[in-house]
Image (cartoon, rainbow, N blue to C red; front, side, top):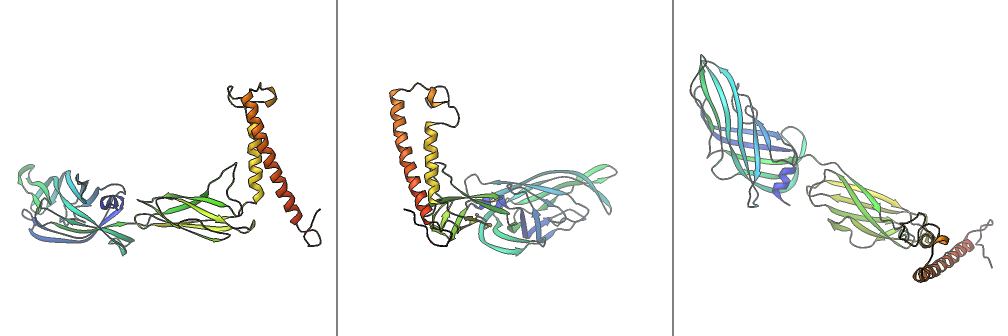
Length: 358
């Protein structure tokens, strides 16, 4: 599983600890700072997020503004993301004794993204979420510079920058994700001219997953009742599954599949399938072979099977083909007649016995 893709799919990041050294002008104080348990929401599918200067970064009031962190993964494929900041503020703030104009915020930080075993946690916003990864800052190019100046009677006197230190900032964070809502539908493969879902036959199933599934899917199948598995029940990235159906024409084969995505989200689908009578296959084959001689709809003008067969001038090849199809129709019709007569003889008569016809 790719750590960067996992982080990109998250809908929030919980910053457990943000530690830094602040270098600030008067009247603000400098020194080490630490901010605990800050939850930052983000859009799933993006590495970007927004932090608030006061709530998330510990900047004192009244300097309240939002900072956009734009994330870019490392180009060498390593699990590293660099978040850059180039935020224009251009706002005036009044503090005792002086006015301050904040121009912008620049900088950013780089972090290693590492996967961890999924664990349920209460996030810092109080919701129940699951941790999947950690972020740890690396390198020395990790700083935010809040650039401003003091203002007296409309005159900008001197720069008053606040720096969240490049060398001492550290981030310990976990990526969090609300459980995705998935649903599963089990379908069956249908062959009109040669049905497979008959008694004592083989039924081919497939699972269709809808919702916010992420990454590679695994499928765990099971069958109870009038059927047994025909192949592996644990399948990765392949949604197809075969079932050997039993001999009952009234009891269903209960088919179930549990689908799990790469982030541990789970969904289950079920299907109760009653096998078709054996005579169904023969009837379908007879119908399809009849349609080869008498198509239900006209074909294009170059097809000798178009329209009414009696109005078509047949070639020798056409007649040979008709003869072969006719033989197959006769064979199928006789087999269908035999099966129907056998079933008729086995039906209970009105006295409750087995009717034997001679």
